[in-house]
Image (tube, one colour):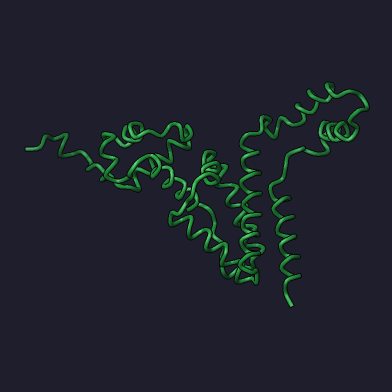
Length: 224
């Protein structure tokens, strides 16, 4: 007969690929992908590490799986919207998602990702561009130009050594190190920031809008 404690205990949720990947995602968000080991994931789930192999083949499979979970958080372009606002929302959403998962950007740039969320994400992006009249080649160039900006800007933001609120203080610290009169334009910018006239923080949407405006002109030029 089961003890009273056993009878009142809630049944443990069965182990599954989804649970393994969600636990791995939480660990990666907290400590980067270097924190991911089968033993550590097993500890998070309260199981032996060997039991994880029934659901994921190895660490590579885990990395692919959690990247796909991250991609699944990005807003997909809607076929009912114009391509330009849809691509703008897609870009902003991708940037925000990658900031929430700082480890993911590098993996997206260095691994072949064929998970269901990634395939759906890319297909919907290309579909939105093709529906708007972009040729196959131009749609591919457009997609890559946008993603290069998304990944590059995000990596810079994640790794830049100065926080946005520290920019005026940094300008005041480094300005005296510039030889007087030698770098007038850099000095002008620093003084502008120090005076509170400009925050000196790079704007993700500025670059994104430049790309979208350029693509719009190219698309118009290809039409009869």
